Image (cartoon, rainbow, N blue to C red; front, side, top):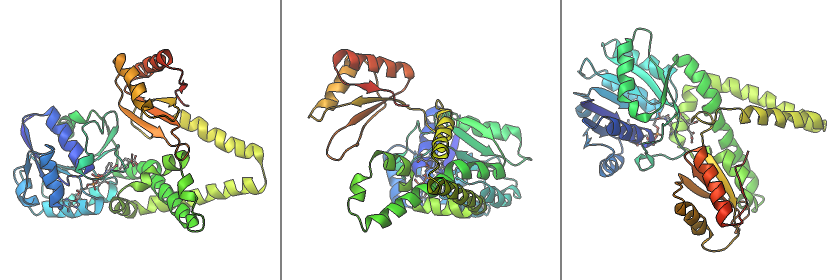
Length: 368
Ligand SMILES: NC(=O)c1ccc[n+]([C@@H]2O[C@H](COP(=O)([O-])OP(=O)(O)OC[C@H]3O[C@@H](n4cnc5c(N)ncnc54)[C@H](O)[C@@H]3O)[C@@H](O)[C@H]2O)c1
Ligand SMILES: O=C(O)C(=O)C[C@]1(C(=O)O)C=C[C@@H](O)C=C1
């Protein structure tokens, strides 16, 4: 499609969407604005946008699509400002905020002026911020939630989906209220828990200096998202305050149950607690980027000697097996333990397992 797309907020999400749109719609012009001029300059340098707008006014005036991708409080303010501008009457304004009720409520001011606003939330991301972390494949197979108000014409929603086709996401329309309830459970609340575990550990580490050095696999897995942007999460919590307070009450009750099981040394209840959790988690959809992203990981036990990683990647290269990611699980300090290699498909993972088995004696497993 041809047209002018204006992205306000050139961070991880705005930058990634700009890349997706440009890839799918080569004739479109992507204009970007960021309150942080360094981010805007970097976005232009990295080829994420075609032009930098000097301000929101100049970028928005003749845009066909406006994407607001700033923290959610800022998003509300940007909407207020857009409502003061003589925009193209056919423009679609959307956002990417992690909360929807307050933003969609604020956007009534645009609708009162005849401007179409369709709330949006791509349900994929990272703990990393900024345009340097933007990537075109970020939203592939993820859900992309849209929250159009009832009066919005279907053709407008379809047009927005066409603009966003290059995300290769799965679009789903829901109400803002339902959106905030669901994302409160599977996204916002886990971020509070991750941060709380890190904070508790930090406090306890004041008395025990070995703690940070021992914080390996399990701790890192459950706390990765505690490295996310504090500005973004401060805003999200305040927007979804009521639901999160309810979830915190339920969580406290849940923790009291665990405490009682332990006080009573009730081994069968403790077993069932973990068993039910495992069963539910193992049954979650893995092939889509939903609550748990799809990774075709192969775990390889490796000895601690220089060159072992290039040896293994060399075997895979010999058989032309592409890898998408490679990392080391630091199971023990100073000792290389397990190499985790990710593949795009299950077929590649199986080929790699056979390949490593053919060329070496390293033990492999696919985890569980
Ligand atoms: N990070 C994620 O995992 C994720 C996933 C989906 C949706 N979101 C949502 O998308 C939005 C953007 O998140 P992100 O991860 O890209 O954050 P980010 O910090 O990487 O980028 C946000 C950008 O917005 C800019 N900005 C802030 N105020 C602005 C203003 N008034 N005008 C113009 N630019 C402004 C910042 O300078 C920054 O460059 C947030 O609303 C967030 O809730 C985040
Ligand atoms: O993968 C991560 O780091 C994320 O936190 C991504 C995540 C999530 O909670 O799943 C975070 C916020 C968004 O609104 C959507 C996605």
